[in-house]
Image 1: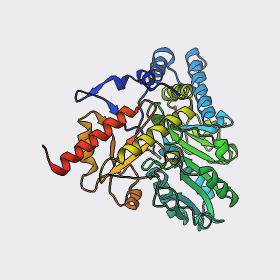
Image 2: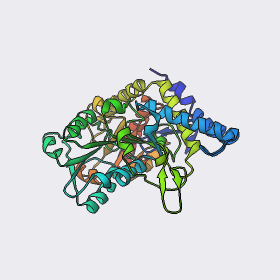
Image 3: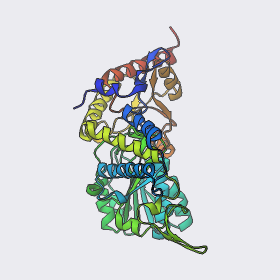
Image 4: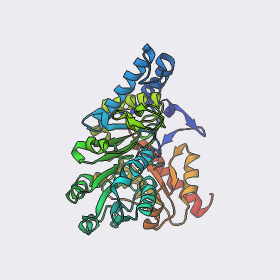
Length: 411
Ligand code: 7TS
């Protein structure tokens, strides 16, 4: 296990104060903070070898290309992808999902076909499919939730059936923390000949994820939630699926030969990376992967499981506060959504902010799920490698004080 105090020293922003109080950053599901090594990787690129990739014969361009492709190989290894060519750089998870919906789905989903998602999807794994099923005359089906926030799998064998062409499923819910049984569901999807896409936005940063073991066709995730910069993410696509996919964006870099009338496509993965890519941020994401591997992903998961268990217990002391999601830290990630019937989450969030405690409040881009929970918004604390149990104590004390103020007034 790693030493949280030592880890904290690697993150410059954690040294700052907010309203005269030490920052307690508990909004990691929205975006994580960045260690020195990631910030340094950006500076080193711009100061030392800034150049375009895959098109220069000069030293800087070759150096940039080597570092950029090294980062791709690191990301591939991190998620157990068999080869770097199966990793396509994207901006984020949202772009990854839209790439699948635009470059794979139109050729593979037709009238009457079914796409299965869950009732806890982030909008980025719901809204693209709504458009696609409308355009293709297909049907969107939902795996329901049980009362405790786990998936209700009683009717799974009717919902995933021979008409299913795609199972697209969140691995860890950003709103209620639920970890879904992706491997088991992927096996069911495969058995009926469906493809499998995984929204790894919350799982890849927080637990070991291996695409070969999951046997999925697609896995999308974002660099900024795993200690990397904003504006860079990745989409893993199984090689034989990728080879049969049409390009998403068209232009420079993704072509082999071009005439005035037509074009042929470059090798993988460049075929899916039109235009100048996000070089600096890809390289810095490689540094984030190095950092996480240094800690060990089993240790990251273990730390957050411990924090989650502690937080679930601590929140039980707060009267009238509901915490959503499974009550078992083994079945959820470090995401604690909470709600009081009389106090709006935004008021709670603002009161906590005054104590230097950053949480997110709102619908967390899962508006339909909020309806299932019977609320319009929640407060949400979410943990990462630099958070401690002391910070959970500060959070729970802060919530208790704010609730006292809002339900009884000052004094
Ligand atoms: N899927 C899940 C499960 C997510 O948590 C998020 C972002 C996305 C997809 C989209 O990721 P993006 O990088 O493309 O934006 N979730 C959140 C959140 O919970 N608060 O802010 C962003």
